[in-house]
Amino acid sequence: MTADDRFERGLDAYASQFHIPREEVLARFEELVGERFGVEAIHSSALAWTDEGLSLRDRSLVVLAALVAQGGLEGQLRSHTRWAIEHGSSREELEEMATLLAIYAGFAKASTALMVIRDELDQLEAG
Image (cartoon, rainbow, N blue to C red):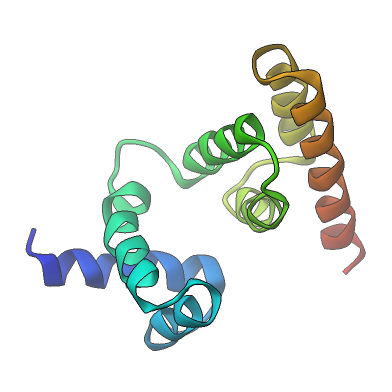
């Protein structure tokens, strides 16, 4: 896969996740984190979200687990919670994941993350 192909696949992945046209993806990143970081993110997401080793649902659960374990990433937890639901996860699965992670990542991180996840799910269900 060439660098151009990788970039194109990354654009497709983020366009899908952000629900925006692919030609707006780089501009969105430029607003959020700057062009250089955006380009790196687009390149790195190409295979992370588009190869066929895991389903999008499974990838979403893995990413959420990593975010919970790191702690302090509310914005990312919110967006990835939405994507997990879009990719087929249920409220029950997300709550079970956070509960399980309390043992491995710590109760403080997991309970804080669970409150963010629940709040985001409540917003999705209300809206």
